[in-house]
Image 1 (tube, protein in one colour):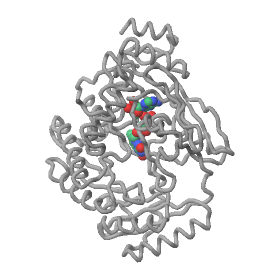
Image 2 (spheres, helix red, strand yellow; image 1 turned 120 degrees about the vertical axis):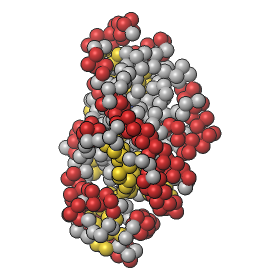
Image 3 (cartoon, helix red, strand yellow; image 1 turned 45 degrees about the horizontal axis):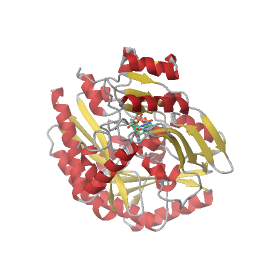
Image 4 (cartoon, helix red, strand yellow; image 1 turned 30 degrees about the horizontal axis):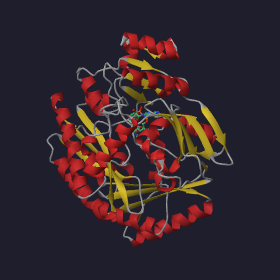
Length: 467
Ligand SMILES: Cc1cc2nc3c(=O)[nH]c(=O)nc-3n(C[C@H](O)[C@H](O)[C@H](O)COP(=O)(O)OP(=O)(O)OC[C@H]3O[C@@H](n4cnc5c(N)ncnc54)[C@H](O)[C@@H]3O)c2cc1C
C-alpha cells in the first residue's frame, strides 16, 4: 500500500492520508456487535490499508478516480455507528473517512431547506437548523454519533417517524460521486415526474453505488407544543389493534411505541402494570391539534379495551431515550446481545412477534427475548426485537448471536414480513435480502451495481448476497 499512500498524498495532501497503526486500527469496524466481540476475545480484525480524510468534493473525486484506476476497494465511512457490518476493510482497501467534510452549506428558511456536507454529525446539523426555529425532524437514537450522509446511505429511521417520515421522506436532494469519479446531484425540484427517482440508487446503497458528498433536507418548523400519553393493553395484539385504529382514523402522533411486558419491566420499572404491554405516545404540533389528538387517542384506546396510564413514563423515555450500554460492558458481564428490526403488515405482525419470541427462547443460552414497536404506517408496523444470551465460555457467544438473528429473520419471512426495517443490510443481513427483494430483485440489484460500478470497487462484499 505504500505507493498508494504516496499517490493519495500527492493528489489530496499528505495531511489527509493516514497509515499509522492507531489510525488504521480505529477504522476496523463500525458498531456491529460481532466485530466488537471478536476484538474483545482477542481475535484478529483486519484494518484498512490506509485512511483518507477528504475535505472537499474534489478530494473525493480524486480518491475515487485513483481507486478506480488501481482497482482498489474503497469504503465510505461516515461516523461508524452502523450496526450491520457495513464497514469491513481489508488490508488492500482505502477507507474514505467522511468526517472531515462537515460544512453547513446553506439554510433557506422560506423554502425550508438545509444543505450539509455528508460527513456532518447529525446532532450538529439538527442544532444548526434549530437555531432558526426549524427541525430536520429525523431523530435516530444514534443522532449524536452518526452522519447525515450515513443516514441516507442506510435508509435510516428516526424516533418521530410516524408523523415526520423516514429519511426518504425528509431528503430533498443528494450529491454524490459515482464510482467513475463523476459528480451528480439527484433531486432538484420540490417534486418531479422526470423519470425514475434516481436518489433511490444511493438511499440504502450502504456505500456500494457511490460516495454521498452532500445532502439537502426538507425541513419543518419546530413544533410549538408537545404532550404525552400512555395506555396499557393486555397483550401485544390488543395494542397493535389500537395503533391500527389510530392511523386508520388518520391520526399521526409522531412517536408511537408499544413495549411488551418484559420490556416494560426492564425499561419502565416504576410504571409496570401486571405484565401488560405499554403504548407510549408523544404528540406535537399546534396546541389545539395536540389537544384534539389527546382526546381522540383516549377515545380510540379506551374503546379498544386499553387502560390510560401516567404520561410521566413517556417523559422518562424522552429524557433517557438515547442511552445505550457499550458492547464491551455486556461482554465483560458475560452477555452477547443485539437488537433486530423488522416490519409486518397488520394482519401478520402478531404471528411474527409470537413466533420470533418463541424461536429465540428455544436457543440455548438465551435469557432475554423481547420487543417493542416504534414506527407505524397505514398498512402495518415495525418490531424491534432485543435478545441477550449468556455463556461461561465466550466462544459460544458468536454462534448463539447468529442463531438468534436467523430465528427472527426466518420467523419474519415465514409470515411475509420485511426483514430489514431501518438498520440496513450490511454483511450481517445480506444472506436474508432475497426475502425482501425476491431472487429476481436481488439479480436486478446486482445488475444496477455492475452498471454503476463495473469494477466492483465500492464497498465490495457489502449489501449484496454472496454469489
Ligand atoms: C446506539 C445506536 C442507536 C441507533 N439508532 C438508530 C435509529 O434510531 N435509527 C436508525 O436508522 N439507525 C440507528 N442506528 C444505526 C446507525 O446509527 C445508522 O445506520 C446511521 O445512519 C449510520 O450513520 P453513520 O454516519 O454512522 O454511518 P457508518 O456507520 O459510517 O456507515 C454506514 C454504511 O453507510 C455507508 N456510508 C456512510 N457514509 C457514506 C457516504 N457519505 N457515502 C456513501 N456511503 C456511506 C458505509 O459504507 C456503511 O456501509 C443506531 C446505531 C447505534 C450504535
